[in-house]
Length: 296
Image (cartoon, rainbow, N blue to C red):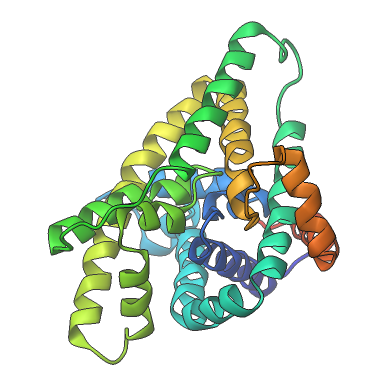
């Protein structure tokens, strides 16, 4: 039986993993939330955020509405984003293949976890197959959209926060890659790195965070309704979104003379250590999924 302190440490650690994933282009914090078993609790807790939360006793409502869980989880996310942004940038430059291979292992096993969570009755029908293919195509199109160079204003940063919140709510959608497409990834990473040094950086992060919070609250309500009314179809869609993101996780340089699988084979022949790191990623998911928490 895990103690209350141990439970909080596990939640914080899982939040840290989500924060690290949100910094890596191609990886979704929502995927990590599902892998580590906090996804549905996260959606429920966000939906419990209401103005009358303090009615009937602060401590009682925090526990009942899972707000304590949410605060600990988000503390872990923020800790990782602020603490590891420079370190992740270093790893992406110097150990890009190894890092992405590790995350590929995480994401591949997350598909298995999602599949195990689905009610298998009447799973393989035409409507679910169409939904799967459609979500794969949508995800692939998002990850292959060209980035653009916008005028970065406070309103635009606020809008980016709202759009980026999808990465927290939808497994398979990478917030970092969305920011690359929107042309603000490097800008925001620099602001996060200078968070404690410049007032302008603090202002930017607060504006982005406010937009992110509003987006999370809005989109979580949509997802909660879908999970309640169309759980099987929602899980099929999430699997499709994750599958569509897979080609962007590994930094494979496409050779026009080879097929996709030919390029994949060439990548692993040139980077044999990547297989080891994929295995470590899969093993890590297996261990994470065994860390049970109590949010009741």
